[in-house]
Amino acid sequence: MDIIIRDSYEEMSKYAAGKIAEFIRKKPDCVLGLATGSTPLGTYRELVRMHKEEGLDFSEVRTFNLDEYFGIGIDLEIPYNQDQSYARFMYEELLKHINIKEENVHVPDGRTKDPEKYCAWYEDEIKRVGGIDLQLLGIGRDGHWAFNEPGSSLASRTRIQALAKETLDDNYESFYKNAGIARDQMPHFAITMGVGTILEARNIMMIASGKKKADVIAKAIEGPVTSQITASAIQLHPGGVMVVLDREAAACLANRDYYIYAEKIKKQYSL
Ligand code: PGA
Image (cartoon, rainbow, N blue to C red; front, side, top):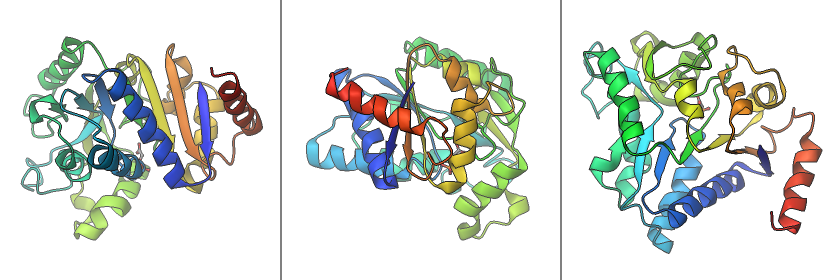
């Protein structure tokens, strides 16, 4: 696991975007797993800048998003894509600014009437394109990866998941409150890739910033692997794993000095 610590959110975001750009340049038709939330906003901003100023080309890139609220456009009668859906988030924050082809973009469809069949299809689509080359992930305050809330099996696959209170609170503050949507009108379920699905990505990059993530980041990286903190499954991944943090999110890591040293010496030896 490469644990990269940067001084600020901006630097963390630049590092993460730079790594994603490296993947795209090496393999222009790479399959990216994408995440939503406040944390990746800076990473997406930087990718958009690289596209506009440096010609970073997304024309062959394929993307699969981790999750989507279930019920949007059905139970809540909010028109799809004029709402708080993750499809809309991705469109606004990244996709409409770059030259990606619409047919290469996949966000789970929260309007599906047959979730079981739909989730199996989503898994098959990921397999059909040869699997995910690089999966970007945040982490919830309750330790979740995507919407794999505490107690999700570490072998779980794409499915419907009930959202935890902590997740609803955080997402309400970040995305619903300002839109004038009442707390009890938020979707309480999501379609989410499973932890097992995520672990099949060939490379994983988890990003986190700010004090409120410090405790859970230490638990996920240095604590025991447990379904109570599904992001701790990162310790089981056999391939390329990067954790990119700002100083505040790294504050509770017991081995922080070692991680900083390891990055430096690897650079020195060009490893
Ligand atoms: P956040 O969410 O980036 O808004 O903190 C992260 C997550 O829930 O995975």
